[in-house]
Amino acid sequence: MKHHPLVRTLVSLRGNVRGCVYTEPLWGIPFNLYAPYVSVYMLTLGLSDSRIGLVTTIGLAFQVVWTMLSGAITDKLGRKRATLIFDLLSWSVPCLIWAAAQNFTYFVVAALVNATWRVPHNSWNLLLVEDTDPNLLVDVWSWVQISGLIAAFVSPLTGLLIAQFSLVPTMRGLYLLAFVMMTTKFVVMNSMVTETKQGVVRMAETRDQPLFDVLRGYPAVLKQLLRARTTLLTAGLMLVVSISTMVRSTFWSILVTEKLLIADEYLALYAFARSIIMLAFFFLAMPRLRDLEARKPIALGFLGLILSYGLLINVPPGNYWLLLLATAIEACSMPMANTILQKLIVVNVEAEERARIMALLNMGVILFTSPFGWIAGRMSEANRSLPFVLSIALFGLGVLLTYLVAREERRTAVESIAEDPTQVQADSPGLT
View (cartoon, one colour):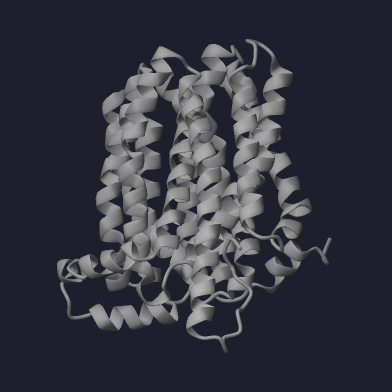
């Protein structure tokens, strides 16, 4: 096991990437313990499908604002300080609100505060990647996802607690546990990391600029982004994953409990199975896939998700085994579609303006994603399968976008060689 590529990477990590990866289970475990039950928790406290979707849409709308600010905040405060301050605000505080939630108002307030997570989403990612060897990024992102999947080993306990104490008291306890573990993670990680080289440069450049003066640079950055066709197509892939992830996280448990008639306490077993299968996939398959042309595993991942969701919406009520098969296919498909895409996002963004470009990319993705919380909620009220039909269509679009990104990279490479015939083309970190 110690000779496995992923294990070798984990042991060899140094600097900021070690602090980010080693502490991530303290966030990933509690999040993955409560996440499968959030929508059912809201239903139990009296929210309708459309109101659950509205909470998601409100949160996403405010995430747009914080995403726009995230690049400037990250450059002004530095990657390290911005991550600590806004991690505490966006996760520790909402966990306490969710634990005490009584009605729709509590969830709206929590969503507004939680929306600030878009700042550490930017700053933490920069801490993770800016001083890290690009050749390690697939393995690093694999470990980030694996850290959350470790929750699989204790997730069946959640089902037992629900069976013993019922859903609402169990969820309140899980949110309090999340508050303790996540807060510990933020403080410990902050002690293990230092400001990145590019972060030091940007802090010096923006030291005497008010925050909103830094924002004035966004139009020029936007023009630069709009000229980068490969980056724009990659943003399209980000949008596909964003909307489909929102649909799954919000409406999967509702579909499974309300239409497929699976008992609440069994949701933990499906989360357990999904996590175990995904863990096995990361260790057995991902080291082989990272050496392939990236477009192949990404496209294969989207095709697998089409198959998984197609099976999911056709599972007869009470058929536990067919639901398990759909879950297993999804668990093998998501790492292919998502993990390698994360590397593409990093390598296709110019380093000098990475904070602001990532802020603009994320803002665009959230802006286009936000209406789908309400839209999917209305679809779910009409037919609990419809949000997943929407996801199937998006995965089909993802396959097409993967092909277009690959074609654009080939075109760019040919033009580059034509302009400079003496240039030696390096191995592309992208899709081709």
